[in-house]
Amino acid sequence: GYQITEYNSDQVNPGKVLFDLSYKTQDNRYRIALQTLRKQFDTHPRTKEGGFWHKKIYPHQIWLDGLYMRCPFLARYGMEFHEPALYDQVTFEFELMEEKCRDERIGLLYHGWDESKTQLWSNPKTGCSSHFWARGMGWFMMGLVDALDFLPETHKGWKSLQAILNRTADSLLFFQDQETGLWYQIIDQTDRNGNYRESSASAMFVYALSKGVRKGYLPISILPVVDKAYRGLVQEKVTIDGEGKVHIHDICKVAGLGGHPYRDGSYEYYIGEPRVMDDPKGVGAFLLASVEVEGKVSCMAHT
Image (cartoon, rainbow, N blue to C red; front, side, top):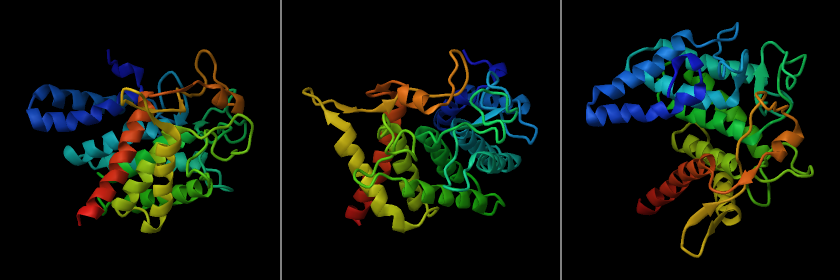
């Protein structure tokens, strides 16, 4: 069902598995699929400055989500297929997102930016949406640590992305819930009525921060707060039923901006989205977080 002319960033992310499938099987179909996804970005719509739109149906908009969906794929494609220009694009994507959406006062990033400043959810002066949505920042953080895996340290953008990762990590740690170690659906409004500690974003932050330390992108000094967050996630959000099946709770089912019906990006909108159990976006993030934290503990015990 993939259609290149939909220019949908979300459809690129699953393509990351194609690299390993191609090498393991030597089946040329996987290579063709990789090249097809790469070809999308030859004509993918861009902002005037050169940043890729999140999707064709969201014109002139960049969202935090999109950087995870496309940048690690493009960075690895650049490495595997010897296309260094993709390193420049990946670097630019993160730099542009931070430039447009970072709040200089508290260091968090707004969910999206509308270049045209015509969307009802966008600030008429800045073009930014109104709130710091936790999972949006989770996508952003995971995109950073995963893209850095494939960006050569000698590339001019490597230090830039590491600096963005460190700045964003510092801001996130400031807003971490001191009791549980988790993060709220709207990160900076912890005491506001209806806000709640959201599982998928908390797991994404655990994954990104723990991996960042393991890879040397972040200082080892943050490990205690990362471990606290993981323990809080397991203790507060994970249950085991009578059949021995594991479940994770309080996952925001979905959130976006604009579209039909229209999503206005208000506090009430984000808080009003369904909270569900075992949604793949939460389960996947929790698996990633568990591999990082439990794997680190296992390696330490072994050595």
